[in-house]
Image 1 (cartoon, one colour):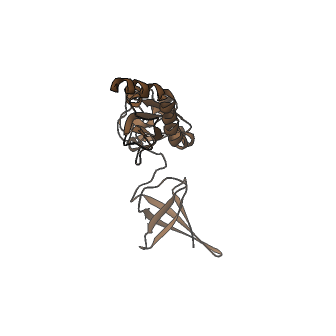
Image 2: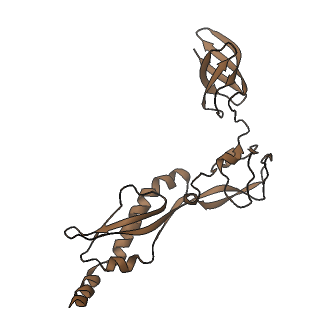
Image 3: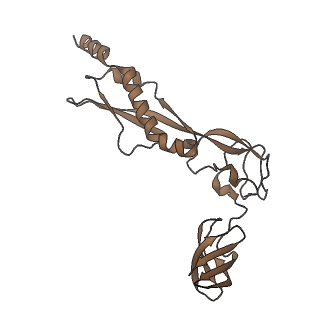
Length: 221
């Protein structure tokens, strides 16, 4: 009798439709990241899911458990509305994005030139420490940590050609009402052209402005 009820329950649970709902929910949650990076999303749900869902004593509802990650290893949830049945089904969301990868091994001190990298589709979810994604930042950058051919480049392995760090000397242009003063100072933190930067002038005063490509900081007084 019990087995008959189980067979009846399994026959009325739309397993494929429920798993497809879960896949679409996971895909939708990761869509913003994919769009921002010009990539795409692939969702894989554990193979054992079908059997577990078929055992439900009801036609369950699909939901995303709170605190789930938008990419990488995650899960979907299924539960009954009026019965104490709930499960989580393991899933994995891949965020596939074209990124620069070295065409040959590059040692520390190498300066990147055109041809040293090519674009390859990489699952960013598999690289939690981050990956350099902008080809425009490659040309002229210096490798500070060796990188392997064919693998994505961690941001910490590169130093932009115009990257400045704490203590680097800069020229400061102070623009006031009807006057311009030039002074020298030192960077107080890391910054790249176009970013806000704080500088300590030789006089000891601290000012903030926009870093230019030519090692100048423009400060409006």
